[in-house]
Length: 184
Image (cartoon, rainbow, N blue to C red; front, side, top):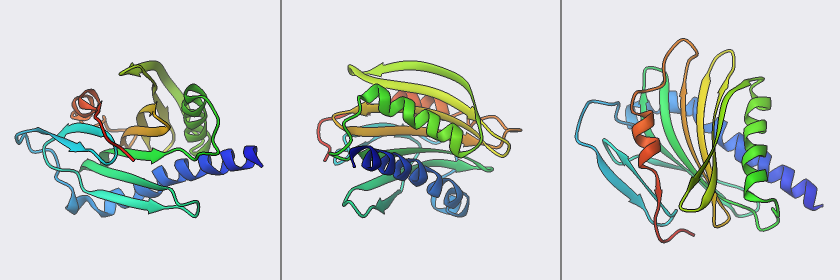
C-alpha cells in the first residue's frame, strides 16, 4: 500500500508540472514577458521561498484528493518559452529520502516525455539537497532545478522549443531562489 501511495504521489507531482506547461502558452497575456524592467525580490512566505522577477508571478493552484495542493508560480512567459516555480508538500506517506525523491522526479520527467537526460548536477541550498538537470525531447527542452526541504518539493523549471534557447532570465531566476522562514 505504501509503495502504491508513493507512486501515486510521484505521478501526481509529475502530471501537475505538465498540466501547467500547456496552459502557460494560453496564459501568456497574464504574465509579463521580459522587458528589462526593474527586478525585485518577491517572497511567498506561505510556501517558504523567495525569488527575483521583473513582476510578481501569478499563482495557480491544483488540489488533490488526498488534500494536498500544489502552487505554480508563472514567472515569465515569452515566445513559446517560460519559467515557473512549483511548490508541492510531500505526502506524509512518502517515506523516501530527499535524494530518492529528486532522482525519481528526474526519471519520471524523462520517461513521461520520452526524453533524454542531457545534463545533471547535484546541488545544495541551505543544507538541503537539490538536483539540476536538462531533459530534451522532440517538442520541448526542459531545464529543471529541484530541492527537497522540510518535506516539501520545490521545482524551478525553464522550458523552450528545442530550436530556441531558454529565456535569458532563467539563470537569474534560478540563482535568486532562496528558502525563507514559513511554509505550510
